[in-house]
Every structure is written in C-alpha cells, then in structure tokens.
Length: 236
Ligand code: URA
Image (cartoon, rainbow, N blue to C red; front, side, top):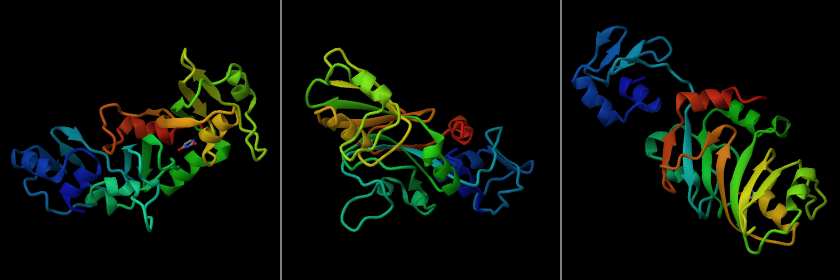
C-alpha cells in the first residue's frame, strides 16, 4: 500500500497535507525519514510515524456523517440520492455502508464502516445498543407518555416496544428519546401511538458516540481512536 494512502485512510491527513509534511521530514518508515509517499509499504508490519506520532494500522475504516434530509441510508438507489454520495471518492472506493438506517427525512448521526462483523453486532437486537434522538411533535405530547414509553409502547401492528426513555421539554412539543432497538419508523410509530405526529427527527447519539456539532449537515469526519475503541468495546 502507498504510504500516503496508509496515512489518509487512518484519517491522519489528506494525501496533499501528508506530502507537505513528508517534504519537511515529518514521516518515517521503520525509523527512516521518507520524503516520497508514493513508496509502498506492508501496512501490517511497517512502523510509520507522522510528526513524531507512531501510527497503528487499522484494517477497517469508520466515519461519522451528519446526515442531511433527502438522502437514503443505503449505498445505492435507482431513483434517490444515497448517503455514501456525500463521501469523497477515496472513501467510496472503500465500500463503506451505513450502520443501521435513518429515514430519508431524518437527519443527524450516521456511522459508516466497512466492518461488517462489527456493524452486525451493533445492530443485533440482542445487544441493546442505545440510540438517542431529538424530535419535534405536531402537538404537545400527552401527559403520561413517560410512563408509557418506560413500560413499552404498543404500536398499531401490536408490536410491544422495549422499554424506552422519553424526556419532554416544558411545552411538550419537543423532547429526547433513547431507544435500544431500531424497528422501521420506530419513533414515528411510537409517537403516532400517542395520537400525535413527528414533524422533525434527528439522531444525536449511537452507543457512546455523540454527533459532532462542528459537522454541518452533509459533512463527515473519521471516527477517533477512542470512539472506535468505544464501539468495539460496547457491552455486547
Ligand atoms: N425512528 C424513526 O421513526 N425514523 C428514523 O429515522 C429513526 C428512528
């Protein structure tokens, strides 16, 4: 693998930025300063430092996207734009896919990876990974919703949701919901079961990872080492 690709895939720096750093002597491979990052290395065994920091090779890539409205949570769709179109070509080549789905009109935190095993574990209903949302309702949410969510809302098709936490604003027009499952349109259907309607929905947390508020809608960044470690160590 090319050294500049190795560095950019770890989210350390773009190829252009790392080329500049390398010209100044900021990149070493196995103890030797390397100025030409088109050289190839064995990513599994090479010891690479960047500005004095030793890098650890990672087999998989993980990014956080602040999903805008209008995008389908998929890698392809015959008619509509998909979330992976918001990533640069370099990342699209790595075949990342979204960990779970958000509706087309839902915005906020979406994690994408090419680690299928981890994604599968995080989404498995047995593992109760928390997802937190902020929503706005068409009308004030009825009193008693907190207890109904705690005890398990029953959807119109008879499905009994797992216990969830709903916290309402003072005017009861907006609130937060924490779920440990992810059924189709779950929050919209839970709020509908109260005789109300969701008019805006944003995911702000997935497991221990919170939406990075410095990302505008449509922007992405690599997950940090500690965010990845948190995902890998999520109580499963
Ligand atoms: N619940 C919904 O209704 N929609 C989403 O996109 C996510 C959770």
